[in-house]
Amino acid sequence: AQSVTQLDSHVSVSEGTPVLLRCNYSSSYSPSLFWYVQHPNKGLQLLLKYTSAATLVKGINGFEAEFKKSETSFHLTKPSAHMSDAAEYFCVVSPNNNDMRFGAGTRLTVKP
Amino acid sequence: NAGVTQTPKFRVLKTGQSMTLLCAQDMNHEYMYWYRQDPGMGLRLIHYSVGEGTTAKGEVPDGYNVSRLKKQNFLLGLESAAPSQTSVYFCATAKVGGSLNQPQHFGDGTRLSIL
Image (tube, rainbow over all chains, first blue to last red; front, side):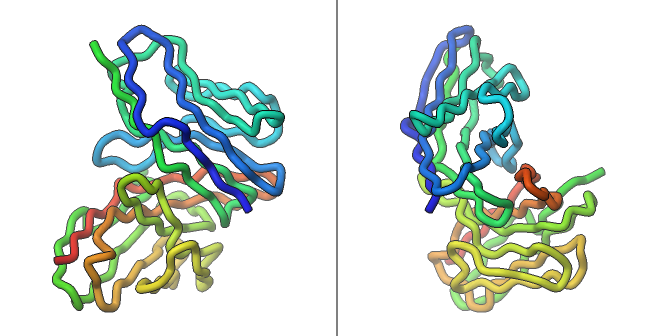
């Protein structure tokens, strides 16, 4: 069985400071992992995906995530937060296209 | 190129009423999905389809039915709406991924309230 735990329901940072959104997963397979972002009243947009190639994955808008198998983690980071990064972020684990398990989400607040 | 379009965007129903949510895509994707999003629970898969004429149950299928008569459309039906079905519903599509999982493309959601 596969599942995702997002360790923080809410993260607050100041503009220009680093962002860290934590995600741990469990999977019986070698999973694919994704991070999606959701802005208010919008659908989800793909930030980045890991599919067993390089363990450090670069995504859009300066975000990146590192797959650590030994820690079963896939944390999302960004060196410097922008006001426009304020949104809800979802970590997703998937062994195949028919079974994607979403985390509960982390709401990111960026203070001026 | 509209991507994934959901109609309607908002709807209020009374308990026991029926309705159909429409998802239309212009990306020629094989896979289509319906999710519901509830506070603090992420997205949960209701039903999905791997191609025209085929559908399958997801994690929370009870109280819903779906149809995929045309490749570009995926309909979600509520036969007798219940307050527990108040939620935001998202449609998503994906290409056939082969050995690599393809990301899903999402619509903007339908906000449904059942009174």
